[in-house]
Image (cartoon, rainbow, N blue to C red; front, side):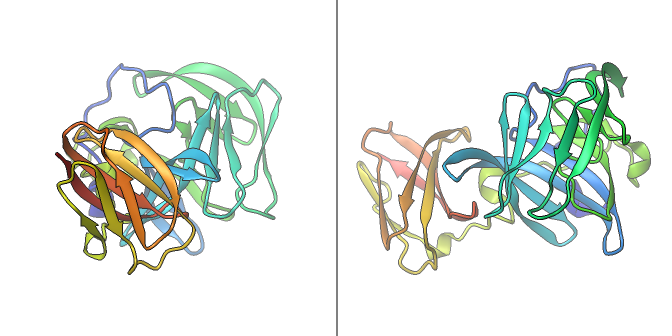
Amino acid sequence: MNKRLLFLLFTCLIFSQTATSQTMIEDGKVWISQLVGPTVDGDYALHICGDTILNNMNYKKAYYVDIGNDRYFGGFREVGNKVYFQEEQNPEILLYDFDLEIQDTFQLIIAPGAPSIDFVLESIQMETIQGIEMEVYNFANEQKWVRHIGSMDGLYYIGFGVAQSLGSYAENGNILWCEEFFFSQSCNEYYQSIDECFTTSTADLLRNQELTYYPNPTSSTLTIDLEDLDQQGKLTISIWDLGKRRINHFQSTYSPRLEIDLTHFSKGVYFISLENSQGITIGTFKAVKM
């Protein structure tokens, strides 16, 4: 397995008996899959990292990582027992529906105008998978979903004519699914973690050199000079505390100067990030409230 993907994971722990997270889409989750097809052969990762707003709805950001390529992939949102995916300006698609009953048909449309892929649900049962008790949805075409993890192909189906399989799944550095044959090294090898998820992804390359902001420190209003940035449409501004918790966010129409009122914030250090309408972070910086 290439070193680029290894950078994604925390210390890899031996599988435990602990149940998985009770939601599928949340920060710190990583899916690594293998692709085999006419134009692709290798492994890639999807990791959930940060928040965004698309079409006035809240999504979790996902990043696609393979050799030499680390980019914003799209937004996932989870509503009850359903998981949706939104990519740029394409229509939102339903990826998972855990409200299905036996003999129900699930239609997956992975791209506008593409034919649907039909899955007929044959059974729902509890299975012990690598030492963990999981709820498994088995479909007639041998497709398998695991609740709170997703498909055994990976979180997202890449496309037609491509075979893919889930090689590893991790939550906050704890590997809960791992096919030993998939890797050139053992699953209990130690890996390096993602460094500050919400600010330092290569896909969300920080462009602090393009941002001028003042006064900093401030006791009231912080002004950000955006005149040199080639941006249009709405911006999403997020304010994070030192514990990496997003404590406020709002949208604003792009203008050469943006003002953020910090008057009612407690004294301390905050991170402020700006995201364009495509969900790409165009700048992140540290602000001090006096």
